[in-house]
Image 1 (cartoon, rainbow, N blue to C red):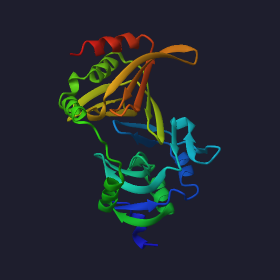
Image 2: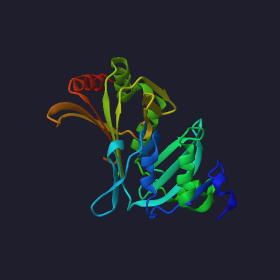
Image 3: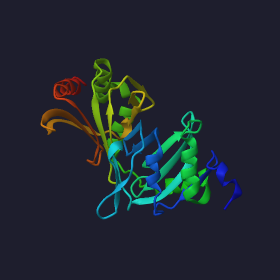
Length: 275
């Protein structure tokens, strides 16, 4: 084994981990404070929580982390890499490339946190190969499925990205911050599903993105890919709640936001008031 492996990963080099290696994901339960980040075409949902034990599905194709509100398809996992990222603080991350999306899910801790030793050990204990970060990102670019949109959708996407504060989702988020409205978020994709509870304390818009969050949970919205929204009521645990479903231009539901039933009328008014 490379004698310098204990110094990796670093900003220039990542470590490859075979996703079929037994017990890789069992080590997540060791962390008291771990960042969990999932993304799909239009959203990135990240939260900090206590680690959890992985529970395999009956057929072994998926893993569930009940306390993290996370599930993903192990069968779809193409690769796992240990990396060091600057965001802007340095983070050690275990990044997972799934069949439909590269880096769809990752776990991370700060490089200078008390948990960093555990994360570095997790990565180096299971690593089988060193790879340059440039090579990794080039591979991901090639492997990522292209997103095709008609010219009309492209034009509308560019307008949304150029004027993020004019979109009703920004105004919905703004009202949620002002009213301290508790939100239940569910990011969905073909091979990953992550939920989080968020009472937002801030919302920012810049360069086509909206960032909504609190100290422990952050939702990043890429307006370029936000095509349509639907508002409905549904029952959960015997109570009626309001749901806001957000879709891509291909009709795939990317995010579900739920809140107190009274939020539905507020959301509808905000959507209808946008010219």
